[in-house]
Amino acid sequence: MEIQLREQDNVAVLTLSGRLDLASGATLKEHLKRLAEKNAVQVHLNLSEVEFINSSGLGALVSIMKEIRLQKGRLTLSNLASYVQEIFEITQLSHIFEIYSTENEALATYQAAAVR
Amino acid sequence: MISHIFTYPSSREVNDRVLDDLLRILSAGGVESDVVNGVCVAVSEAFTNAVIHGNLENPSKSVTLRLQVNDGEIIADIVDEGYGGVKQIESRKPSTEYDEGGRGIDLIRHYADSYRLTETESGGLKVSLRFLRTGKKISTT
Picture (cartoon, rainbow over the protein chains, first blue to last red):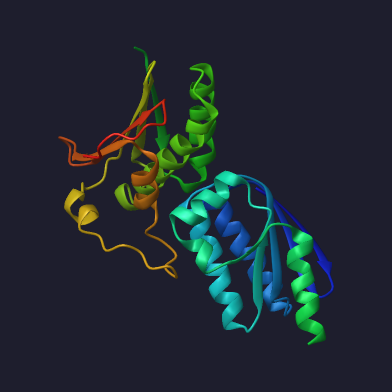
């Protein structure tokens, strides 16, 4: 799995590509842990190029979400391919993640929250 | 009917190889694209369970995948060299939404048209998965 990172309006935006499974999930968790150490706890994951996800990848996302919430941060997801969305729904995780259709839509909610 | 048999080391890094092998065989068999993802997810779940919970990531133990692509169905058997555990798996409590694990069996149940857990003669666990190529569900055993 490849991870591209950029920052936009105080949000760490990560675009993931490839397969999200046990091994790559651990890599992603490590990546997010390093970001959290720099107080980057507003995190958006763009999953548009994730071609495969299994329960281990989902577990990594749950772990990341819990860690970010512990630090009073926020995690959003966007651009889920239909088969990825289906897996979120089968496992009922679509209820606990903030999922947006597009990255722009997700990032706009951070801006809206910042001006409140 | 041709059976494709693959043997993998008990490593969490091997899932990519399993998926590459699966995709190659499913593609060669002309398997419909809407079936492929479900097969990949279910086999990947069974493989990960075999590595982590079956073989406990012991490098001297292997996981075997036997794959058959037929006209109307796909059969996959995933066999580990662990300690069985059929009763424990069947009596497992469902995961809650904030659990980090425990969703693999739910995904297997969703995507496989039937699945069966048996203990091998040597005490390991065999997960037998069957997928219909029509996408039509049959009863789960």
